[in-house]
Image (tube, rainbow, N blue to C red; front, side, top):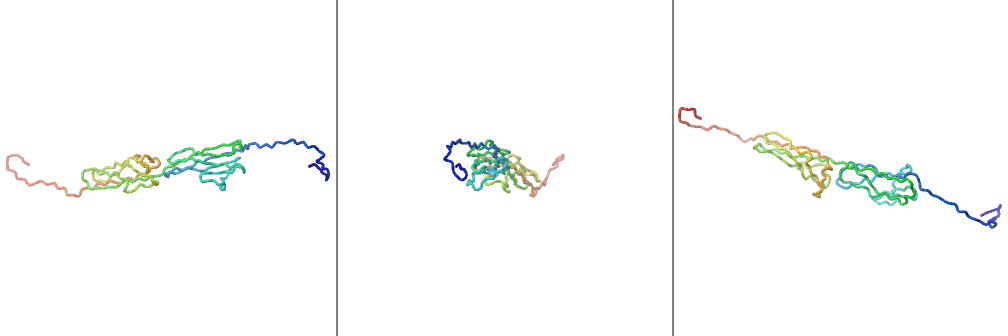
Length: 239
């Protein structure tokens, strides 16, 4: 519309249009998606550490709690038109010093960003303490060794549900009257799950409480007697 004063004079012109250009360039703000380091304790199951940090231009983006995420998804709204989703966390059951805390990130429009970085944290799984108590036992001296290879008089403590101690190498022995420790070979323990081929001993720090073997002196009377004897004189010393 072209006006002159209060008059519209658009009809006096032949209009030629030269269209301009609107340009949107990818954002050069760093978009960083990171899985954080995590320390877990062995519990007999596969565990994950779904702990993530998302930053955009140095600002932390909070996880979206109203985006309709499933328990397996973590969503972050970077811009009004860009929501990223993190899934597929790494899992670990057994004790380890460090495994990658991997994940999958879905960025629907990666061309919106020129600087995208993913950082993989570490998962550490620490062992539980398992206490095994070797049995006490005693007997009266009879000239034979006293041994007891048991460990169930006092049940093991510290096992997670489903794990069982199936073997402990116990070698304590005593024959003479007195006390002796019912000793174990320190590393000779086997812990398994319900699967007889699934050994999980390395997921425990073994603490031993060693029992006592006791042999008491025999109270049976021990009598040594020289019997009466009659000999006839023969000119020599006789017994």
